[in-house]
Length: 99
Image (cartoon, rainbow, N blue to C red; front, side, top):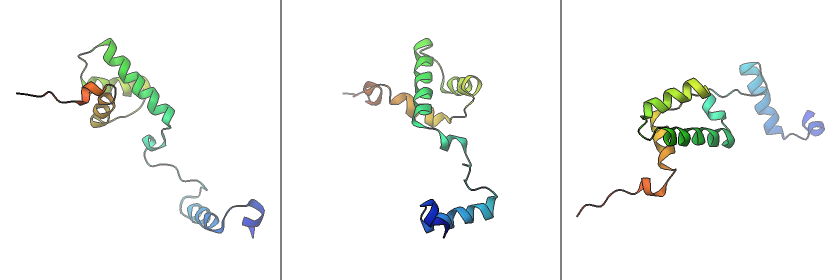
């Protein structure tokens, strides 16, 4: 009945009621805050990492991780940082060829 007035599907209404019974809230909160990052936040983090590399080209991944934690207040894994910085330049992704 409520779905007629709110224009929310019956399936969505069932899901909302189930969530409310389980959590006491009508919206689920993500378990990991990283899941909730928007594309903008990911862009800002990648720009921060790029600036770290420009400022100190020999910076270690663990140092970047520490700076992200201290300055930005985000917890990012070493493999994620590695994948992010590899995406900066197509040349960084190509492996050297040996004769």
